[in-house]
Length: 168
Image (cartoon, helix red, strand yellow):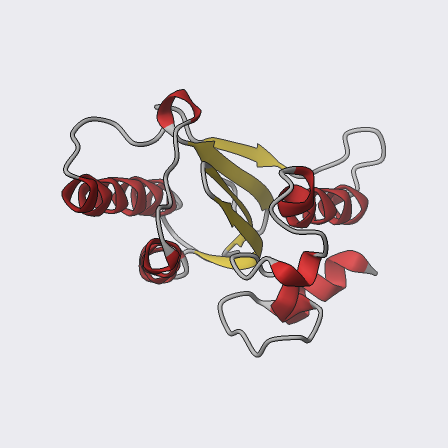
């Protein structure tokens, strides 16, 4: 993945063969702690949703990071270390995630607007639990940034101020 400074991206991946990647509440929390450690030095997290068999992140890369390859390496460390932990926990071996993590730059090519497309993407990310019938209300799914961004939880993982500027 190639990243540009000061750019918004939608990053996502799913379990190999669409298999489950989160098995209990502690798995979700461990993933978020590793995400904070490995990615946030190079970007701001704008929103996220962790689902039983996949994840979505919306980030904005740091404007002044000298080496955005470090973000790429951080994603690799996050996924490898999480895979090792799950393989140990579940007494399994092999790849947990699909080989290619996707990173889509969020620019509407028609009008060169990041704002409208990022807003649509954030809505898509937060709607995942409803579409999967895991919740009937967005506030019911606790492994999403929706609660933080809606002011229903005091989370500090996401850069809420930056996120709100993209929604204006």
